[in-house]
Image 1 (cartoon, rainbow, N blue to C red):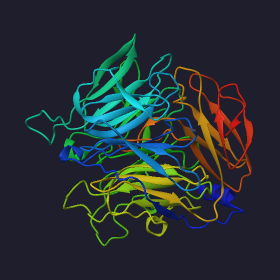
Image 2 (cartoon, rainbow, N blue to C red):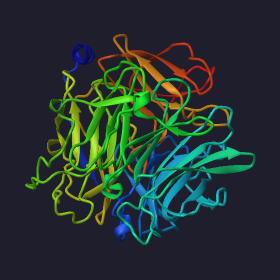
Image 3 (tube, rainbow, N blue to C red):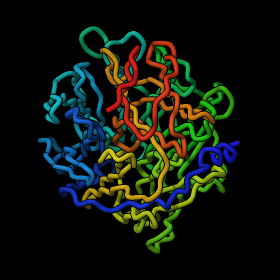
Image 4 (tube, one colour):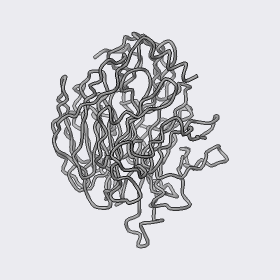
Length: 499
């Protein structure tokens, strides 16, 4: 089924091999002691509403940094620092419903909310009295009938446990809006999450919370987790169809790869990366066969044969052939002797038969630095996805996608009246006449950072497509036809507006 679909999508377009060219950008690196072995997140957002995607990078013991995008055909980023240290991650969302994107900064110490002013300026706001924790995972959603978001904070090792760090995982925090503030619910047991994602995996209208946990510190008795977000959150169990998975969980990415209306889940880890497909109607997921080529379990260049360490995973169609590829940022935690030190990033290119082929070295992104957070986004608005990676104790790297012959594409922004101005929880459907690509708008996933960039769809040879949206707490919109190789703003009850 997948092979036939892919061949239909690709017909008529001869795609060149993917190619990325390094771009000189201001120097920034993620640094710090053992508490910053993990983290190093990167957020992608348009912080000044100029139609270009900017970046914000965590700094660890260094200052966090905003990279204002001043690109035209060539990528140009201007850096300005944020006066805050101890950051492990950063995510963007409009938390106060003023249409300006704000930042949630994950920290070793109390987390912080910084409100945006619409000009890429940010200022701290005392909205929530966050406790002194070591936060390494975050996600947000708008629950039904709420005017402000629900926030999930994943806390790593309890730094104050005298018997730690092993088997000393902290509990996690859920902040739900109530009155003029938020109420704090403790989610336990905690198993040292390094990624969190609210996702409506069942297309039911309710997002549940997935946590990917690091068995390096929970050691035994822990596993991956999925919390059902009822009035009293509860963990899904094997009785619900949830299968027990134990991994060194680092990052989460989701995408409907086979176009069946249900998202696959890709989990980064130490050793093999876990691409999983849903099983049945419940919350069950099973690993895809090894021969799909997605495990990326050992370095493919650099000469180090020890197992790899995966961090941020991002899906995106880098050739616009209608098939979603996957980028994985790689790098040793610090000096773990059982794991590869020369550990290149992966660029897994989707093949017509449903498998993946490694192209990191030939595409030019096989950096051997300790990669952490990343963003696969179109920085110069040319319809090709570019790449930025935050490195531990090495400079951040940016590559411009300079691939030759590529397919057609579509970029979509969503906005709606407050609350939830960015329409988090919406589902986009793009129909090219042979199949439907579906995409959920989320805040979370990745490793310590995520993207609020336009939703990018590769379309192969299609020259027009139909688009519709399932807006939060609303029915499906009607189908509308749009041309390809263009970017549109979508609003409820309005025609698509081309940029």
